[in-house]
Amino acid sequence: MITITALSQSLGLEEAEIHRWVTLHWLRPDPDPEGWLFQPVDLARGRLIVELRSLALDEEAMPVVLSLLDQLHATRRDLRLLRQAVEDAAPDAVRARLRDLLNEG
Image (cartoon, rainbow, N blue to C red; front, side, top):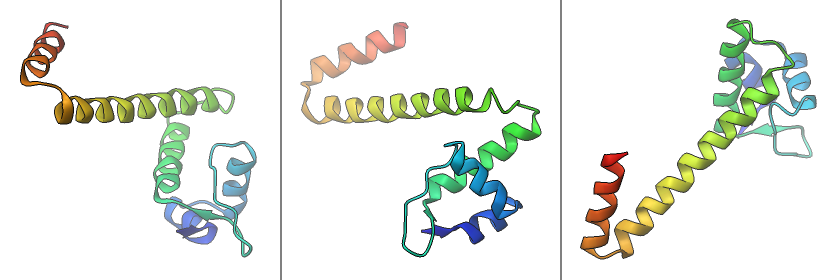
């Protein structure tokens, strides 16, 4: 777990900017009686936000980009799970056919 102080230091930002990002729902910390706690994924997301801002991505576009990236990551996770399920349960002939179909596309 990462505190807001550690997160802001890692990102080179003031804590007030992290608060703003949470208010904008760009980061989603875990509530804690002592304050917010962030996961490593929040640090990665924060680094991405910093990078996108350096590319002059405007604040109105940020939620759209973050949402699309969230969807992409969820799809990749689902595909990994599907691949694992197929590898674990499908007969060899089915796995071979799926590989052939994927290689065609």
